[in-house]
Structure formats: C-alpha cells, structure tokens
Amino acid sequence: MSILLTTLNARYTHASLGLRYLLANMGELQPQTRLQEFVIGAKTTEIVERILAHAPRIVGFGIYIWNVEETAKVVAMLKRVAPQVTVVLGGPEVSHETNEQEIVRLADYVITGWGDVTFPKLCGEILHGPKPLMKVHAGVQPPINEIKLPYSLYTDDDIKNRTLYVEASRGCPFKCEFCLSALDKTAWPFALETFLAEMESLYQRGARLFKFVDRTFNLNIKTSLKIMQFFLDKLEAHPDDPVYAHFELVPDHLPDALKEGISKFPPGALQFEIGIQSFNPAVQTLVSRKQDNQKAADNIRWLTTQSHAHMHVDLIAGLPGETVESFAEGFNKLWALQPHEIQFGILKRLRGTPIIRHTQEFGMVYDPYAPYTILANRDIDFATMQRLVRFARYWDLVANSGRFAHTLPVLLGDAPFQRFMAFSDWLYANTDATHRIALERLVGLVARYLQTLGMDQGAAEALLGSDYSAAKPKPAETPAPKRQARRLAA
Ligand code: SF4
Image (spheres, rainbow, N blue to C red):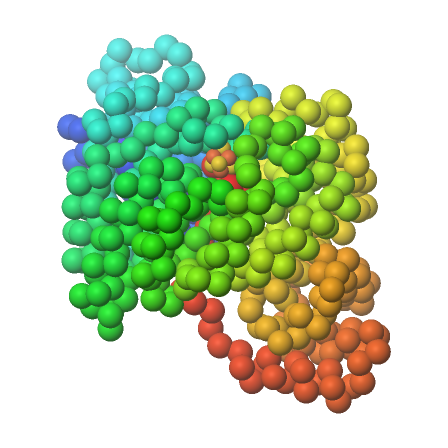
C-alpha cells in the first residue's frame, strides 16, 4: 500500500465525505490507496503508530478548523519517526494563509482548494516522478460532473453506525463575509439523476439518515422538490422504517411549491438548519449578508406552525457592529418564533474569509489559535464576550438539550435573552464550570435559581419534576459538521 488518506474527525459518528471523494477519484492509484479515520482526542502516538502500520509512502491529511492543532502534532511526530513518508495536506484550513501555518511548515506538500483532481496527480508525481518542485499546489476545479461520486465507499459499518454526509451541489452564491463559502461566488450542482441513483443505492443498503451538506438546499426549487420527493416516496412506501433527512436552508426563500412539499413530511423525518446569524440590518450590510428579515421570520413561523420539520436556527454573536443589545433583540425575536433549537454561535475568523476587512475599524480581536474565536471587539469587551460564550454553552445544556421543556419558558419569561444571561451569570458564579455539569446537579441548580427569583421550593421542584419525568430522547440527531467549518456557521 502506498497512499493513506486520513483525518481526525470531530466525532466517531462523522464519516469524512472529503476523504471518500479523494479515494473515489484516485483513478489508477485507487488500488494502492487506503482510508483510515481518527477522532480528535486520540493519543498522538497511537495515531502515528496506526498510520505507520499501513507502511504508507504518502499520507494525505484532511485539515479542518477542528483538527488542525492536533493534526500538527501528528504530522510533527510522523516526520520525526518516519521522515521518509511524504505528507500532503489539504482541506479548508490549509487552503488560505497557507504559508503562515506551522502545520504547513512541517508537511511536504499542500493542496489548496479542491483536491479531487490535484491530489491523485500529485501522488503520481511523488511516486513515479518527476518530483514536484512546488510545495503549495492550487487545486484544479474540474467540471463538477467529472468528479466521481464517493457514496459506494461508505461501508456497511458507516451506514449502520455513522452520519452519512451527502451533497447535491457544492458552493454558495451568497457572500456572507464570515463564511468560507463566500469565496465560491456560485453553486455547482451535481447531475441530479446520477446523484439520486447513488442515494437509492445507499438507501437499499440500509441508509436511513442523510445529512445534506449543500450550503443552500433551497436555491433551485425544482431540484429541492425532486430530492424531497425521493424521501417522500421512501416514507410512503415504508412508513414503518422511516428515512430522515437534514438540509440547510436560506430562510427567506420558501416558495409555495416548497412549502407544499415540506408539509407532506411526517414528524421525525425532516430537519432544517437555518442561518439567520443576525436580525440587525446594519450588521447584515456590513458582512454582505443579503436577507429579507420579514420574509425569513414569516417562513420560520410557517415552518414551526405548519410543518413537522425539526428546526435549528443559527445566530452568531460578535459580528462587526453587533452590540449585546442588538444581539439580544435578535435573539428575543427568534425565540418568539419558537424554533426547536437556537444555535448560539460565537464568531470565528476562518482563514480566507473576507471579514478580515473589518478588523481595524471594529477592533476585532480573535484568538490566534484555532478555532480563532472572537475575544473582543469595539462593541463587546473581553469579559462580556466570555459571558456570551458561557450563555451559549449553558443554552445548549438547558434549552437545546430539550430537557427543561416546561421550566425554560418560566426561566425566560418575557425577556429571554436578558433573563437567560442573568441565569448564566448566576450559574457560573455558583459552579465555576461550563462543562461536566451532570444533569442531576443541573436540575438542582435550576431549582435553586428559580427560588432566587421568588418561586417557592415546592413549586420549583414540581416544575422541574415535570421535565424530569417527561424527559425523552430528542429526535434523531444529525450532528452538524460545525457550521462555520465551511461557512462556520451558516
Ligand atoms: S453563510 Fe450560508 S448563505 Fe452565507 S455564504 Fe455561507 S453558506 Fe452561503
């Protein structure tokens, strides 16, 4: 075996679509190429040992914002114990500001952008000469339908135990400046019939959970309808063995035909990830995000009241020009629309994203280490930003977990953001922790907090008891590859 494709996924359940694309497109090198995935948090020595057990001549690493730090250690150790192995890097994290990165210094070659054509070509040159002279290779973007689809490379084990990522298109025509997809300028659809034939084959092999990573599923309504019909046909034919699909939507584009399709899905079959990011028109203009707020709100309301889709809606704190007050206003507006989850993200400065143009004027200070989270800006100081970070963490624990369904409305009252911020500050002051708060302890803490608001002990315990006894697993989860990871977080 001469070529190993590898990456560190954020979780075991995330099967890397990018690596499978590379493997599918290796051409005559495919028989000598293998794929092995790891999960972040694994010991560096173990990863290196397992990589070397394949005795590879070339190792191709997929580098993302969530794995760059750990992968840098892996590459450093690998080059020390096996300097003869050629290391090739690719992926969004090394596609921009390439020469400024430690991991790039450690590697032999880097491919920026699309690797489907350039990676096999580079491997051929490394193996058979002439030796490539340049370290950094700009990935060639072929016509999209020349790319071989990778879905047959999902193993039976992947199908049974992991989230299957699929894409009917690549790219995004919008230009939100905090998002890497802003550089695409357009979207490229795969041939729909070929794509659906692949989905059919996955379905026949037992796949029931499909996570679409298309940046904007509802760009081309005809295509969206055909894809939805594929799933509706399966649901109708086998209601006892339901299929589950996850799509990302732009919120202000939901024509009637699409609504009609969506309304046909039964409960537990459809999940939408919807990026609002900010309801503040001035902030939207600053980051070049075009969004009709009224339409977006109407559509979210329609989805929550007229469809069975499970909805995650994203907001980002820390954008240029967004104050805590204006963010709070947007948060409260969104809460009133009652999506199932509000994903509260903190801005990250992804390498290559145009948001950098605001750094000076808005005093944007980012963590120099991945994931480059904003630490402070002109309108939000460091301490306040940390309060927002804790809010986001506690919001996940209390609100998005779905474990406090009866208690949450009482906790939030008529000022959701302000009241949850007060709760978050209290929780931190009383625990000094944002992680590893066991559920039982959290329930006790919420009960205590409700009493500080004036609720008597018995009433607080009864309220929490109603959540505790009603606690049930959430609908099928489709763990998002961190949204800002390509947009992070559309
Ligand atoms: S945030 Fe979403 S809509 Fe905006 S550029 Fe990124 S993927 Fe496209």
